[in-house]
Image (cartoon, one colour):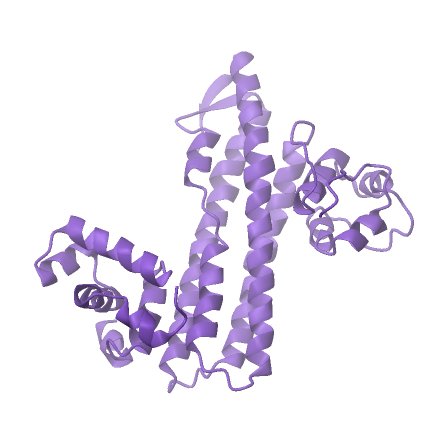
Length: 317
C-alpha cells in the first residue's frame, strides 16, 4: 500500500526524489536545479524563489499522497503549468516524432507507417491547441482574478466542463502501433513506445494537477473576488484484427470507409441515405466497439483491415 503521509517542508528533497523519480520533472517545471545536497524542501524552494506550499501540493498529488490546494500560490502554479506546456510542445512531443520517423518505415511503401505518423501529427496539433487555449485564455483569466478583476462571460467552470485529458489519444496511438504495426524485433520502435508510454503518464499527471489543484483553487479565488465585489472585466475488446473487423456490421464498415475518406457526418448521411442522427449514432457505436476515437485512428483501422486502399485516401487530399 502506498504511503499517504504527506511530504513536509522539513523533509530532505533528495528523499522525495528517491521515493518518486517523477518528481525530477516537477523540480524542473518549478525551476529547481539539482545539486541541493542534504537541504530540506523548504531550503531548496527558498533558494530558487519557489512557493513551498505549491511545490508540496504538486509533489504530494503526483506521489499519491494527501494534498491540499487551499494554501498554494496560483501564480506559482500557473508558472509550473506554463513550463510544463513548453516542455511538451517544444521538446517532448517533437522528440517522439523524430524517433517515430526513425523507427517506422516512412519511405512511402508502408501504408500503416504513413497513417501512424499522420495520427501523431493530428494529435500534437490538438495538444498544442489545448495548451495554447490554457496559456492565452484560462491563465489570463486567473491573472485578472488575482488583480481582483472578475471576468464576464467566462468562469473556471466553463473550462473544467470542457477539460479533457489529452493523454487518452496518446494511449490510443500506442495501442494502434502495438496492434497493427509489424514489429520484427525492432528495438528502436520498442524504445519509442516506452517514450510514448512515459509521455502518456506525464500528460495524465499534468491533467490531474489541473483538475485536482488548479481548478479548485481558482474556484475558491472566484468566490472571494465575488464576495469582495471585484470589478468586472471581459476575459477572454478482442486484440485480433479479424475479430475486430467482424464485430462491425456491414453498415458500420461503410461508415468507417466514409470517415477514412474525410467525409463529414452530413456527407456520410447523404452518401448512404441515412439521417445525420443515425450516422452520429453509428460513429459512437464504432468508436465504442473498436476503442478508437479519432478519424486518423479509424483510417488506420480501415487500411489494416483492407476496407479501402491508401491510394483512395491520397486521391481525396
